[in-house]
Amino acid sequence: MMSFFKPRARSAKPKAPVIRPLEINGRTLPLTIRQNERATRLTLRIEPGGRALKLTVPRGVPEREVNAFLERHRPWLATKLARFSGEPTIEIGGSILVRGVSHRIEHTGLLRGLTRTAVDGDGEPVLRVSGGEDHVRRRISDFLKKEARRDLELRVAVHAKAVGRKVKSISMKDTRSRWGSCTTEGALSFSWRIVMAPPKVLDYLAAHECAHLQEMNHGPDFWALCERLCPQTADAKHWLKRNGTMLHAIDFT
Image 1 (tube, helix red, strand yellow):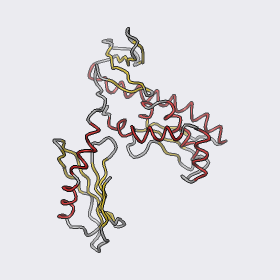
Image 2 (cartoon, rainbow, N blue to C red; image 1 turned 45 degrees about the horizontal axis):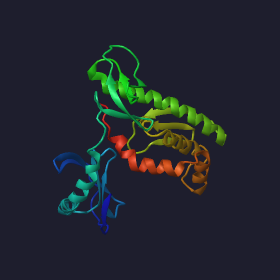
Image 3 (cartoon, one colour; image 1 turned 90 degrees about the vertical axis):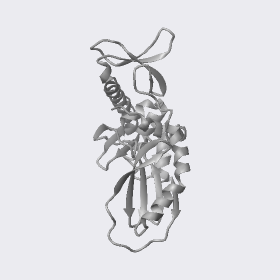
Image 4 (tube, one colour; image 1 turned 180 degrees about the horizontal axis):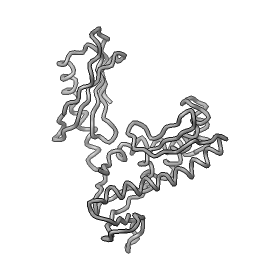
């Protein structure tokens, strides 16, 4: 994220968001420019996955200043976006993370059968996918969703019992802005992509949301509870901060 401070200016009602293409080192990304009356500076963000950009602009900032700001930060964008070039390829012969372990994607050639993890003749992890070749990505994402639900339901049951609270429901989503959420009614929601992370990271996420069943905040008591539920909280948070964007970058469509 890059920004600089800009004094608040008075102007008319904020304009509707504008989406325009921005070319960075041969890549064209959608840039959403949004005015915010409470903003005091221009703030440029790379959306999770590195496939879009968002620029928040205070009211009254002229377009020429917006353009100048973007031009100044092209080198910063190019450096940050370069880290997305090595994301896993979701295709036969490529690889995909399952519980933190890289699995080679292997097409079985069978029209029917379950998607499953296995070990090949050399002892290397593989993910065996049946069905038509054009359905490989969908079948892999369906497999990950099923595995994520199973793992999360097990860990949520443990942590909810530890805090003495009941869970109303558990849902799987593909959110880019957050990994999980908890409502005051006890409805938990998780990004199924978390099953690609090591088990300790998934456990931390389950503990995090279950801690919200008791502490609906991120204060000291919440973090103390979270660390009691998951002693590896600090390591898991660090892993997710380093690698979370990479998991979001994988395209299953």
